[in-house]
Length: 385
Image 1 (tube, helix red, strand yellow):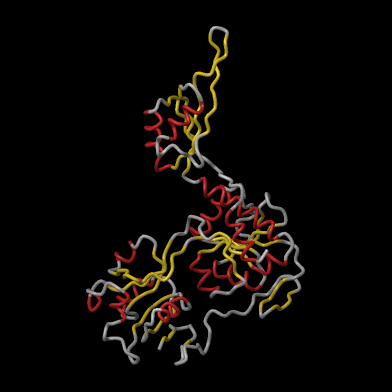
Image 2 (cartoon, rainbow, N blue to C red; image 1 turned 60 degrees about the horizontal axis):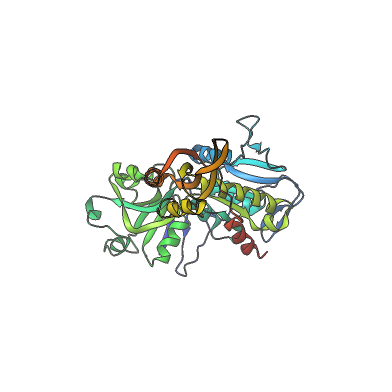
């Protein structure tokens, strides 16, 4: 029996013996649409508005990191007043930016009040609950990394418990006295336990510093987001093997109905996706240019390709460097241009020097555009286009 209990001010939800909830915590009334709403399959859809709407996190580290990424992609968000909830991205016409709480971004994507949004995969999964209208356009924006994980005390009856399997087999948990788990994830928590065949669990809804719940005696374990794990250790808690519910980071999400039915949304999504993918691919990459003496471009290329760290994305670019001696123009040197990841930069420079490279120049990359953005083809496939 999986039970979701409540603290003061929260409703009570119980999974009955058939596994079906008597009430659903994460089913919300659609938010009021600003312009002429219609109802489609139970969702409110704002049909008459012409603007394309992008929802961004309104506060915290997620908000600042999102704005920084968009700025790096030449998509700076312009706010007339920092207290306003609506802004613009001048580079994309007809696009409105709406600052919202992450869970409200998911809700408003479902209601039709937003077309696109950037949220963590944890929030998307918790509040989207597998709704097929939510499409993940880009699942790895390289920030907001965390994991939704079960943590238990390091002491007492849990001292020698180090896995989810061991936790489930503890004889203490019965239908009358279930394992008490404090969490803000009242959809993912019960679903995870059910999927893993674990019975006799009661979830209490809570926000804020969950780490204190076991010490206070109001919970046996917690289910919460973890980044480094330092806060857990400082509160004498530990993660357990098999207890990670979800790996999460920031993602670009879209409404299927908007992508198919609202003018300009698919095109705007394509532009944002191309900018994001090109910038993310270039992160941590450097252009390395060096001069090298050689008898021909082919001979120089052969030397470069003999070194494992100098192949670049598709191979080196080799071009003649012309100089004039005794009134004659000749090419005794060749310029080598390659793309090198940051972690291999110094090794690559050593290898260049070893084969005769000199005058090595290093510059960071901003974008790497492919012939076609891989995730764009995946998106069209999801939409059946």
